[in-house]
Amino acid sequence: MSRRGWFLFSLVGLLWGVPYLFMKVALEELSTPMIVFSRLVIGACFLIPLALKEGTLRSAFKYWRYIALYAVLEMVIPWTLITNSQRSLSSGVVALLVATVPIWATLFAHHSGDSTAAHRTRIFGIAIGLVGIALIVGIESVSDFTNFIALAQILIAAASYAWAVNMITRKAPGVSGVAINGIAMTISAAIFTPFAIQSWPSQTPSTNVILSTIGLGVICSGIAFWVFFLVLAEIGPARASLVVYPNTAVAVLLGILILREEITLALAIGLPLVLAGSYLASRKPNPQPIAV
Image (tube, helix red, strand yellow):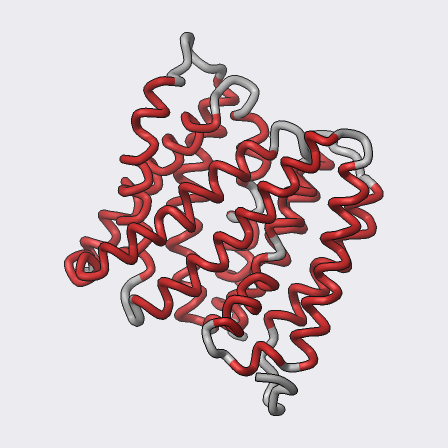
């Protein structure tokens, strides 16, 4: 990987590691719909002009039906569930379970006909990852059933992420990712508008909350998506998908250093299992698969 590739890879790992910190701060004074709506509007205002500059917006509109479905699966559902879950879970645990996306992606790829998804290495990775998930869910749910509901929300969000990418890759091949996500954010923002209006804050939020919300939109939804597609072009989708690992590490470290979150037993046991499982599940080995 070139120096530019390493730089972009590290940058997107940092940019997608900070949203959990921003969400945790914003939730102190804002509702989930208000946070997600603000993030979507700011992100769309960043990506749509980029797509116009690329000249890719018009061609992407040909696939608007699939992009609308992608918007629901990639943004409306997961961003709502992940933001909600952070009311009762640490940002580290949330980021760790979101890191299971490669596991779900492998399962969906097999369902879509990708025979390499059934290779023993990837199956072993799925098994390890599922053990890690079971341990995290079990340990975190002992103290409070509310935790179990929050954990389930994150796993649904991770599966939704994986399904969304699998679907849009097949249905809109070769279409600019910047254009797809710009349109998707616009559609999602329209969906959230009535809910955001209904939960509009009665007083001006604090400076920290405002800055965190702006950070979610500009850094995590606008710049991060743009940089990620630069990473895709630079190093390819296989290695770019590994960005989930530095993401998780950044989220865990920020939670401990800034939010003063504890290193829980679930985090200590689940972190290596989930990350190792996700890594193995995301690999595409050359040998023939053992099942079809």
